[in-house]
Amino acid sequence: MHKITASSSITIKAEPKDVFKYISQPKYFYLWNPSLRSLSSDKPLKLNSQFESESVILKNISIKSNNTVTDYIEDKKIVFENSFGLIKYKQIYNLKRSRNIYTILKLKVDIITKSQILGLTTPVLTRLANNELKMDLNSLKVVVENKIDYKNLITAEF
Image (cartoon, rainbow, N blue to C red; front, side, top):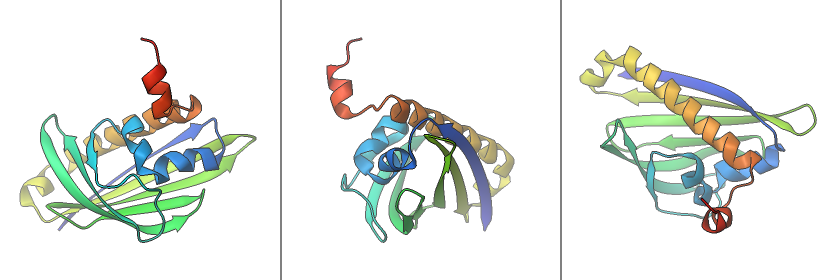
């Protein structure tokens, strides 16, 4: 058994409830997670919610996940756990109000695999996972601070 832990945090100029909306409603996941290819649900999540997802890593490696919300405190915390496939993971999102209208969002991901090959590349995978988290959180920051929704994307002029 091999475990990789990655973590990142970011300060977002928005109320925790506004940030939480984007991380607790799958319909918004596509806006800030560029590796996401599909989701089985777009309904708001709550404790014990389940949904399937498919993401692409390292250009063209597809990973399918069966996700369950295992911890949920509205506007403060949400935890997703994947229990399917070669790679299992736990994503922990913690939100904390900072100053007036700022939110500190901390994201920790534990990745567990039985694969010997992946175990041998733990240092490289840890760096890749940390970079992925930073990219996702930076994308989330842009989406939340600019209040981007699908309506914005459809009417945006390029």
